[in-house]
Length: 211
Image (cartoon, rainbow, N blue to C red):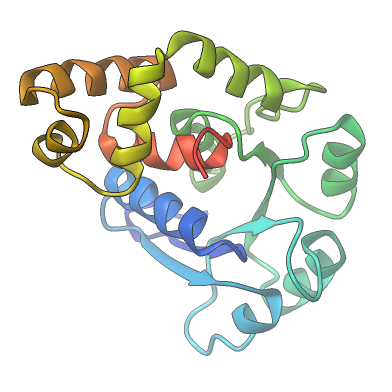
């Protein structure tokens, strides 16, 4: 599969915010790995550059969906591994993804570090860990657990953080000191099990914690 430092990942998802967040997380963790993006299978297949090492493919795409398009991708890029993405983590969905040729299934509600773990294993050619979030109701459990750990004020901070506001601007908006906001941000990172603001924004959007 090649070293992760020279890997080329193609992210195919029709939600621009998810692609942006996922791309930031991948680049921050995997260094010089190249990350390409497309909003549909049709757009991805127009790519004229080198074939990707790994495709992160959303199931629910506009036009040709991920499940139906897997065979087409495998013909176009026969050596690329495919990890299927979906917010729908029902056992039947995971089974369908595997049967269509995906090497792994990742639930969008999973913490970024869990998604990255799956990507690392596949890029290194190692057996992928148990499909993340493959149990029925795991997405709901993940989101509910995070909500229960956050106070109403921390939920407000998270929403503004996802809008790209700095601690200083969040403090002005909520009439809080910058130090107080910093404390809320650290609590949010801990509740979401992430290490950075970009990962927090990505996790919050993936789990439906913010609009």
